[in-house]
Length: 260
Image (cartoon, rainbow, N blue to C red; front, side, top):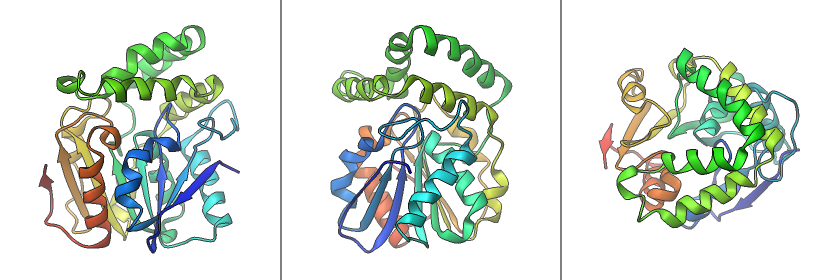
């Protein structure tokens, strides 16, 4: 079973899924702000953190099924699910397969679009670099995930993100890349999901197409979106603001489409 940790003294279960080359420790900066409101179930996805590599390809559906084994083991249902980046892709696959278990779905600096041809080609090319020069891959790529206007201020966070990425199993990284190449458009998941959908995005996010994601969201009363002045890593760049939105939005209501 996947490695997981539980914290928090709240009543509502919130399952947190990290992104590519991350692990469950990425939520540490937000934990303080969320722990009074939620029971936090933080999970290491396959091939990341302390979780094993399951196959040579980790599809989003495979990872979603492994996440369900954890929630089944903990006997939780009707819970909130939040995924950062790749964790958002896994969350969408989970919502597609097991919608009845979810109270809400949060895409946290993530996308419901499949990779376009250019992105798939980039991922294919990255496989060789990951095999042959993984430290260079991490050192070149991780800083680009942060707000370029605040890199000096975020230097310690960037170094921390690099350290986590470098600790990720090489086979797990390769399996995740292959799985992300295969993923499909999940617009219909948003259209058919009955629970609350929360989208938190960054103005300076170079990893996903924020403008298109927000522009093409279905016009439904159960969907709310928020645009923050940060890059791809709101959990490190704006932890208190992100937590405030999550606390208030998942437990109460805010006006639609706020700008921070």
